[in-house]
Image 1 (tube, rainbow, N blue to C red):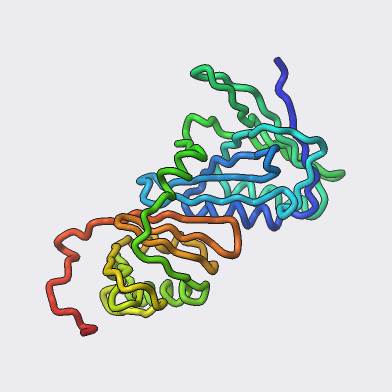
Image 2 (cartoon, rainbow, N blue to C red):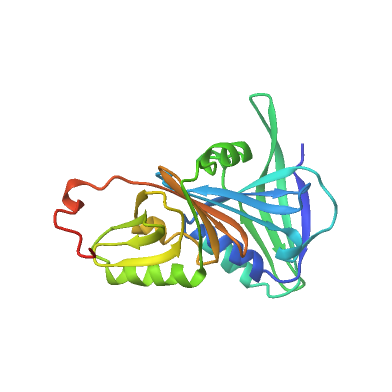
Length: 266
């Protein structure tokens, strides 16, 4: 049976490229879904250790993607090199066709649709980008994301502004020889703490709570205004600016990094 196609007219790829770049911070590969019923692009992308999982959704209209016909199913698209796909789209400027060639896959009595390639073309240029087999990806279903990964019994909630995230990133760079960052709630305030700094983020509740991450995990949180739910073993950063969320799971500090001295901030 011949492969089928879904075609979009793209007015400008900048918004969609920005969407893809969010996942490039996790890995250079990504599995994203084209949801015809919801008219959106969706991805749930983990790092190799699954200590970070990022969710992102962007509708067709915000992406400036206009489908030439309606469809009511999802197509899974495996991209092995996000940066390369972005660079390819940048060669087309404004107004081009984005054509997904896909096929039906049946496994364990379940039917799904997988992209074989993406053809981009305008009057001057055509470029065919092969898609990657879905077998190399660890697929995260909607149910797994909604009811397990992002479902947190929150101990502390707080708002984390873009400016505060930028500030914490800058402080982490000044404290770069220490690989951990801690979020500590004490005396009704939430703090970000490294080896050499302690920074007040926002007033909260009086609950005592503490979570430790690698700084490399925190760097993957989008620099956007967000709401944070802090649980016993992870934190959920939900953007207020885009339909994006990132879950960071706690790590245990090894003995070489455990604080032996008195707290310098007391």
